[in-house]
Length: 289
Ligand code: SF4
Image (cartoon, rainbow, N blue to C red; front, top):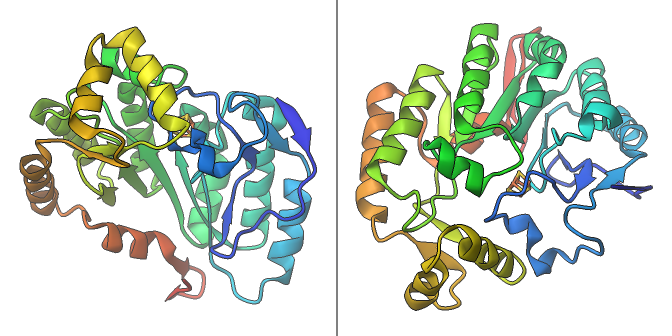
């Protein structure tokens, strides 16, 4: 890892990325793609040391409170967060200034901050978004090698349910010929329904690949799934979008099961929920972007 002083931290859409790069090792990771022009190794994580000071300045100057999101480009609960504490310090600020918060993670380290998540959720809204891709643990350890497995993430969702923190699951990516099975989908949905998640985001059954991401993915396929790279090349060529041949039937099952359980399942509906700021103390609710 290395430190960097950055010029700004809060994006126009109220997102923050406190680190750049990631050590969870997901073999399909889009954030590795060349288009992001990272000037350091992906695993040599950039720590934006001045992020809390910049965030405090930005929050103080904001005229309206809103949801602040993190986790879109890298996981804010990397192992180095245990000592760097950037995520925790930013959460303290978000709580102090009365903003809402949503985070995307695959890590059980999010539970360390349960006290702050609960305090934010008492005042406004705090949503934990957890990515689940693979029900079968052995396959999960190959696809996402350096972070807790799906069963543990499901436990985290259950703990959050019991603590009153709303959750959303990202069901993606689903890798053609690897985890695009009905058993995989049903297993993940079972975890979601047990945890009473508010919504599930699924754009389709497939994966996207582009320069930088594709090379790494193919290298890992050669290591763990002999012959699979050739199958991908034969089926998808250089396409960005690599959809599962079972896309239609799996999506039908996904929508039907979520509908039955009363779980939000259209991306628009879930994003509207995630973006809606709630002021529980004055009982107001508003959508700010
Ligand atoms: S957790 Fe996210 S950013 Fe990190 S390697 Fe996995 S997909 Fe990439």
